[in-house]
Structures are given as C-alpha cells and as structure tokens.
Image (cartoon, rainbow, N blue to C red; front, top):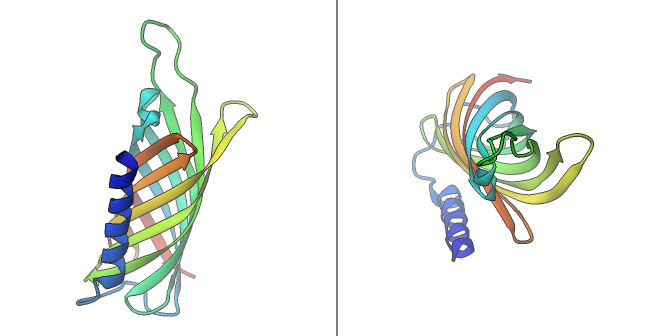
Length: 178
C-alpha cells in the first residue's frame, strides 16, 4: 500500500510538471546554463528514521534552459545522516551518507515558482572504507527561484529491494550563469 501511494504521488507530480503550462516565467532564459550550489537539510523517512534524526548535505545542480519555461537539470552532491543514540546504550547507530546522481526537468508554471522531478541513483557510503547498496532515487520538488537564489523543497525516495528510505529536505542554493 505504501508503494502504491508513493507511485501515485510521483505520477501526480509528473502530471503537474507536464500539464501546468498556462502561465510561465523562468529566471533562466532558453539556451543558458546555470550552475547552483546548495545546502540541504532534511528529515529522514522510512527505515532511515530508525537510526537518525536529520540529514545535512550539499549539492551542485547544472541547469540548461530548453525554453523560457522548461529546463533540464543534472544534480549531484552528498547527504550525511547524523546518527542518534541506541536506546539503552551509550553507543550511537552507524553514521552513513548518500551520494546522489540525478537528471530531471524543472518547469516554471507561475512567475518564479517551479515544479520539477528528478530520477537517478544514490550510492550509500558507510563509515570507514565500506560502501552500502546503490539505490534508485526518485525526487519530486517544488520551489521558488530568482535570478541567483533558489529555495526548494523536495522528497528523495531511495529504494533498493525491500529497503526503502527517504529524505524530506529544504534546499537553499546560489546560482550563477556559465
């Protein structure tokens, strides 16, 4: 049931993305590249909230304006999940991180307001030299962007076999033309 509701949510975001075309305004003109560097803070969901309370990370997003209202994006960076104490013990859960590599689209449907979606892969980095599984990363987002600033919220749904986790995060980024 959880999977079905998440798939419905992703389908709903995709529908909005492709059909919300009445009023548009993009802060990046067509045929321009913008690189934005962002800081992200989030709350874990799914199995991630068992051992951590919050995540903090940084991302770089390259955006190319296809038209004045539609852009394609490429995002990478890293999220660190800060561990919480194990109940009844003096130890903490293991610290870990996720390194996402995603491609997507961003559509401005109101002046400075956009909806977007990204899909990619996230690599789990454990403490020490160990690596965890790579996961499918689905990420719908909504935001407000000016010529240089981008304030967005997104949900990264990370899945690998029966292991599902997520991050509901806020991204604050500064962008500049290339």
